[in-house]
Amino acid sequence: MRRGYMTVFLTLSLTLILSLVLALIEGARISAVRMKFECVADIGMNSVLAEFHRELLEQYDLLFVDMSYGGTYADIGNTEEHLRSYIQKNLRPDAPNASWRGFRDFLAMDAGRAHIGQYSIASDDDGAVLKRQVTDYMADYPIGAIMEKVGLGASEIESYGLETRNIEGERQSYEAQIDEIGLPVEEVEEGVYEEVPLNNPADVANATRSSGVLNLVLDNPAQVSAVKVSPEDYISHRTLMKGTGLCAEAAEISGEPNELIFQTYLFEKCGFYGREMEKSLLKYQIEYILAGRDTDWQNLEYVAKRLLRWREVANVIYILTDSAKIAEAEAMALGLTAVVLSPELAEPVKYTILFAWAYLESLQDVKTLLSGGRVPVYKTAADWKTGLKGILNVKGSLVPDSGGRGLSYEEYLRIMLFLQGQHDRTFRAMDVMEMDIRRTPGNARFRLDACFDTYQADLSVSSGFGYSCEMSRRYGFY
Image 1 (tube, rainbow, N blue to C red):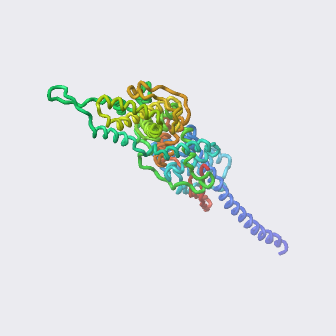
Image 2: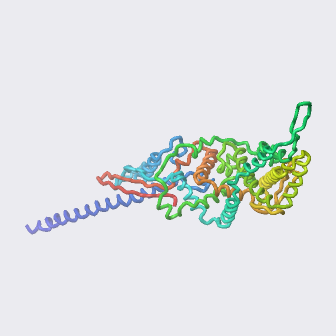
Image 3: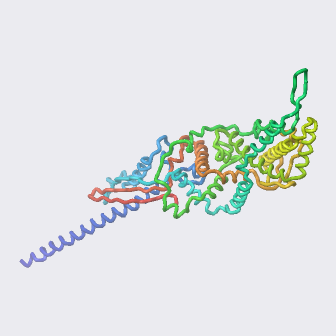
């Protein structure tokens, strides 16, 4: 009986020790499953972000993942498949000779669910997701001096009413006064009477208004880009895919989207007349953002017309305070009305001449700006370029001028962009991005509303030993 004592004791002891060891091994397995799941989830979610769109980064310094992966079908399900694939490959790495080497998987884990329930698409919240990245990218850009000048220019334009004053209506009211008074008639044949012609030079100038601004101010209009696009093919004109909006965590870290910074960014990445970019489809991209028309010509014409309107209002305001110019116009009006023996027409004729002179000066201003010169918002006598006789030969009186003081064409564009509605500015800018990215190999169907920058995934794994784990993670570019 004593001889068997140690055997029984050892048997009982080994049973307890073995149970403890097996429990420790099982606990280690469970912990290892959880730890490996954590590591593999991080690897998988980072791998998804590593598939950011290369051309979008190269051209616009933006980090987004394209859910279509260069294909024709964009859906978050594609990304879920990529994520699950990355997790599975890291759970069970390829080991062709594992069985020959006696290898046994201690964890036997497999990927389960990979569901992406929240993701921020570039166009979400009226483009706030994209602009949040722009704000982050431009964080160290010195925009203060630029925007101060733009803000001051915009204030001047608003205070002088350059955007709102109806100069066309004022001019037509003076022409209506002339028509109301009427011209004297003379008998040219027996019983046939005709009005005595006034030969008002303002009529000659006004006749050019239908010629188009670019045809008047450019020496060679044929050199303007002839590129044409179909805006309906781009993001501003289509029904958008939607994500879950701007990620609050990303906004907290990177900062809320800043419109002034976004406007500055557009001038860094987009071309305009006089500073075209080789990579771009449309050559006058800022003009497209402002106008949204089909062709470079139409977009540049829109901006030129708007500049002409601003300059015409400003020049009318000035010329009506310049006694010397008023005296010149008055002398011409008196001479014209004296010939037709209608001194009562002198006053309205004087004003039509002044308005025509301001129009001529405004065309000269636009030509100066497009030639690389500068024009102040409000002029002095020293800034005035044209003479009164120029209204008889409008196009021939205009000369290129790359000098002067005041604002440049680019700075006037910045003011226009500053005054533009936020929605149009944002989505036309994204049109431009899509146009340029689609020109690169493999991106013919690229669309920004298929691109996300942050996402949250609900993941699960299972083990061949009967265990399963779940977790939720948020990753993104911030």
